[in-house]
Image 1 (cartoon, one colour):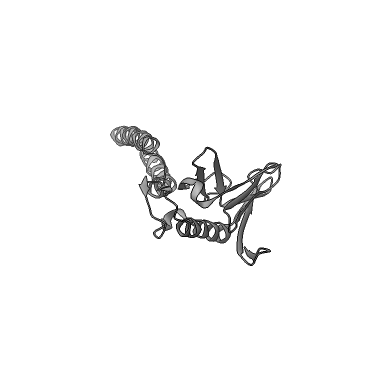
Image 2: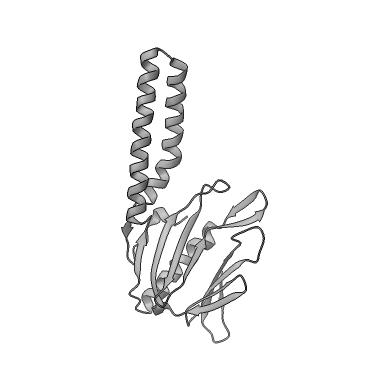
Amino acid sequence: MQVLDGQGGSVTGYAYKASLIGSAHRFELTEDGLSWHIAGRSGLWRYDEISAIRLSFRPVSMQQHRFRADVSRASGGRIAILSTSWQTAALMAPQDNGFRDFIVELHARMAKAGSRATLTAGLGRNTYAAVLAFLALLAVAMAGLLIRALMIGEFAGVLFILGFAALFVWQVGGFVRRNQPRRYTFDQLPRSLLP
């Protein structure tokens, strides 16, 4: 959402509810910097004070299409901005357009301010390596079960293992592909990590 502030500058805002109980997390991009209001606290981070942004894809059981931006400040502090908002006890609603517009505008304003922030996408390298190692072990175990089921002629088990493997690859494959660690620039935001 974009509005004019009292001094003729434009303000881009975004809000989401991180939990069912509690107030919304509100953010505004003002002429002075990133203004935030979270759980009774508030602050203003100048664009040149922001030291890092990490974009990632973080699905959860209630919302399989959820994105996250972690914004860090040079003097300490980190803010998480999510692309979904809690609506009811059973509904987490996506806010794709608002999230994407806010993140793109944040990057544009930081670039205009001459920011030298570190821009990264996906998971951290160590976390990503651990995920790949776990998936490799799981693949070996599944292959062993498949071979065993074929050897004893348990074709229902073979079908179950193949079906489970296909579902697993479909669900986890997107997460792994989108969250590959990499750097990006202010003018080349990773499309796979924006809704």
